[in-house]
Image (cartoon, rainbow, N blue to C red; front, side, top):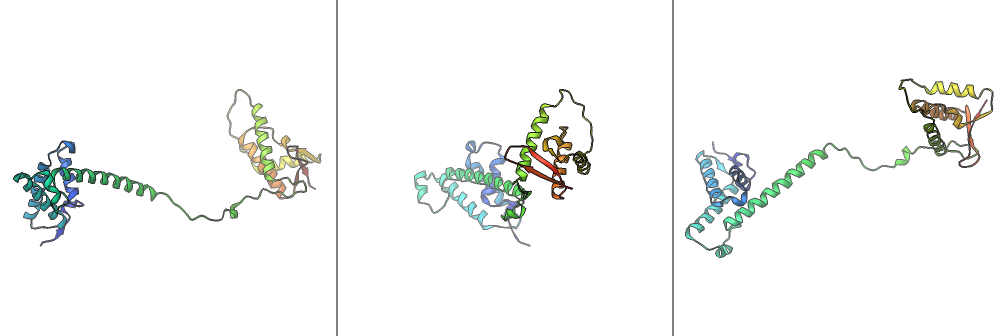
Length: 241
């Protein structure tokens, strides 16, 4: 049964021509186009012998190549090619078309790779980020807020850094927020207030984070009050009975 195919999965006649060029394993600028024309026509002839209906674009290219070959045989000058109705009028035209098609294929491959990478990226429409805005305000009469506490924590880290020993022994010790809350409550049992900086005795990451979060939780639960008279002055932790 006859049926139409894209010749051996080539995307078109230029794809087949490029394939034939690459088969020579020579640079396209060194190849004689007459050899590529003969190979193309032989290829189409073999396909026709299989009683397969070839796509019209392959046959049009075959006719064009036969036209170029016939001109060369009768010795028609290059200047006369311009009056022909064909898009490709000479071997030089054919070579340039193949080079241009090869560049197109490379660019297409690059775009395909970018498309595959793009499939791995998830995007979403912009939304109002105010819904996720962190409320730093702790609402006390002195206007102290979370940013002030963060600055104070940075100061704690700087001070503890200078107290670090020259040699260290790394050990793993879990510090819970609850244990730090208990420690802070005991510290405030016999005093009315303490300096925020006094709550940090050790410079381990777990210790500092647990202590800082414990202070925030105790403030939220109205167990302590955090005050600061003026910017950059001492931050006080007050016991609330």
